[in-house]
Amino acid sequence: MDWNIDLEGSGLVLMRTANAAAPFNKLATDYGESLAAIMEGLNYDIFALVATAVGEYSEHWAPTLNAAATQVGASLTGLQNALQAYVDGHEEMAMNAQYQASIGYIPELPGSTVTDPNGGDTAV
Image (tube, rainbow, N blue to C red; front, side, top):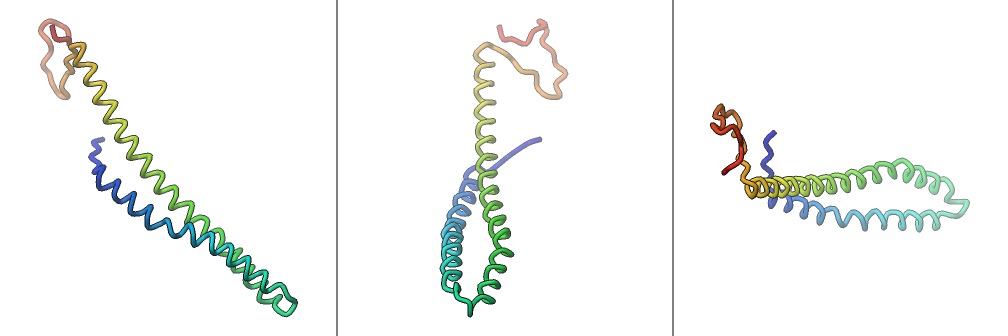
């Protein structure tokens, strides 16, 4: 498989997405703190029904909010890891090619039917 990834463009998308997602971390923290404050304010018998409704609302949506945050984090981490693996692969291929050239190895071209008349694949 031939990969041709625009590293600069992908890195820019990664950075912009991470910057756009950053405020949601604060919102998630604020949501939990605000919910706790609301529940504390509803800690009277007269508000028991409202407190129950708010608690059920929170229980219902908490998994969705957590899943969304987890997915965004996993997607950003996955892209970062994929880009790094791509770069590492290119660096490894370049180092391998340099080493092979330093020992005089001549690789066979894909699809080539030409063979070395001397029976070897090393430059002399």
